[in-house]
Image 1 (cartoon, one colour):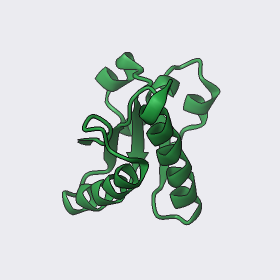
Image 2 (tube, helix red, strand yellow):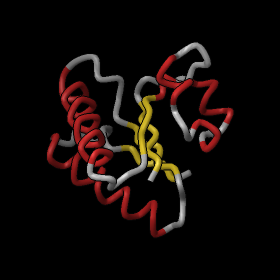
Image 3 (cartoon, rainbow, N blue to C red):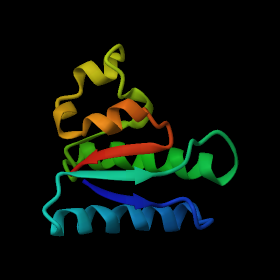
Image 4 (spheres, rainbow, N blue to C red):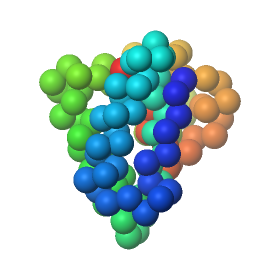
Length: 109
């Protein structure tokens, strides 16, 4: 799994989206299947804007088949319907599943 933090350096939304696309390219070059994006909790301020913009962009990328799928860290719960329907749940490590970090999005490239 490749991990990239795209919110900690006070990035703008445009910069975060650029970092998202570059991270996907780098993940593929490294022959990894999962990209762990740290986007922040998204509760307020710029982090909220970045979190929302990244989720929206990932939805578009999934629809265009540029990525396979994505899931938010807080959905990594056996009782979550999203998690139960997520076809790539075995690709995410058990330690990550225990964390259930709402500030992380896992992208299946």
